[in-house]
Length: 248
Ligand code: PGA
Image 1 (cartoon, helix red, strand yellow):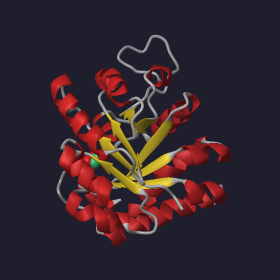
Image 2: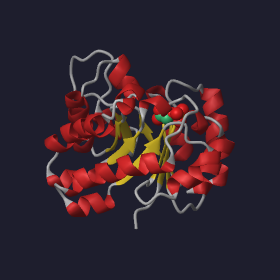
Image 3: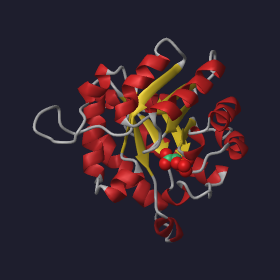
Image 4: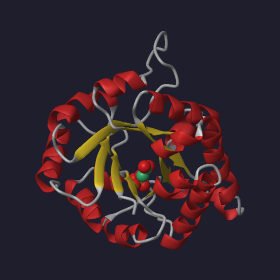
């Protein structure tokens, strides 16, 4: 039985003052949960999260990691730096990074590998555009994205990743994939992993992301291959994030 993971993706939102209110609201309510809970925050706030969340049931992480280990890469943040702040997770390959920062599947694969080498659990994001879905290319596009990652990782490392299926047309739009649409892609992803390592496929958590909200979380999270959520907008309000955690 896979444990569910509810991870918040704050994106480029927050301030010291606003984060303190949000984190306090979460800490007070999340003591013992059936699910794992995490927040992935802008890098400048990792120290704040570490101070606020150490010793609680809430883990924290970053939203990206450099492909490089260290050195002359202005503006980049290394996996070792994230580990220094006791991050558990690093999101890699979010569609906003793929589209606004030109990250290819090869770069995403290298970031995944770098995160694992740094002792982090990468949350590898995949997902198709509306155009791809309407043209019947969902499996081809998502399959290419995951295969690039699987090709770079050894079979043992497949057990060290989390995958997030996030249809681009559902992110921040209020449009959500139906539970069955999401389930179909999740099952396809799991079978791709099973082809390389069947035990890892059984254990890997595959999250759904894209306008997951308190009112649709229950039915999505009830699907056999949906093991949690990567939550954007609704993770910025303690009441909404807590309601999704309860739905898991
Ligand atoms: P959303 O974002 O929940 O606001 O749609 C999800 C994500 O981009 O991770």
